[in-house]
Length: 342
Image (cartoon, rainbow, N blue to C red; front, side, top):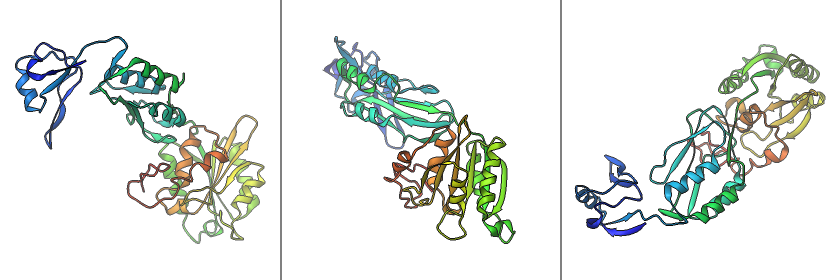
């Protein structure tokens, strides 16, 4: 591209969109990239404060911003994603389905560290809906060397930076502990909260039981639900160190593999995650602390979508929630490991 006076631009091709901003009225491109400037355009351009223009001058080894943005788009997009058309050098990527959004953070950082280009995405490991914006790409200058974009492709590797996983676990068993609930002394207020959260992902509670605080009964119920086809078992309450809190021990008694009893998230520190191995698959079993019943968002909301997408989480996965794991009760949470708000 080359720089010329606006008055001398008649007949030349614009190499980028020309955006007009009138606060509260418009912010859009009046002239698109590729537009051939006419005499009638000159007063409009001058009224926009454009006394000089960049016009296209194709050179070998130099890419236009839209061409470069398309390269970034291609290294980002996995299956079930769609991209918009380039606009002012930017391309937006959206989801075509409900699912769990995954980001290869290490490779994403490697591309962004190259400079003169950027890929911005929403946080990974969170649920998205069809139509949700996932990411946007662009280069910073109007043109960029092709070799720099080749470096971006090399840093990204062969696989897309982003992927979407469908939610596959649809049948749940719910065990509401507490002798006070079993005896009818108090109404079950835990079960409805959990069912509502599961319904957000299309998960049905097909089995429900009120075993009180008897550890053996809780263990037998977990095994029974799994034997009937449950793909997820949730045990509510009984997760602290009080003598009557038997849920952790009951889950251990089933011989389920305990991933972690405890998580670096508040609210939700007394959370337990285990997997019951049937020989064919690993069925997640969770012990939910009391905070799930009354807090807007907890560790349960962070782990649930990943489990429903079929991920097998390990202790190292839960440990990553420490940074950003302190909920401050804000209306719109900006902490990296939240994303939900309250």
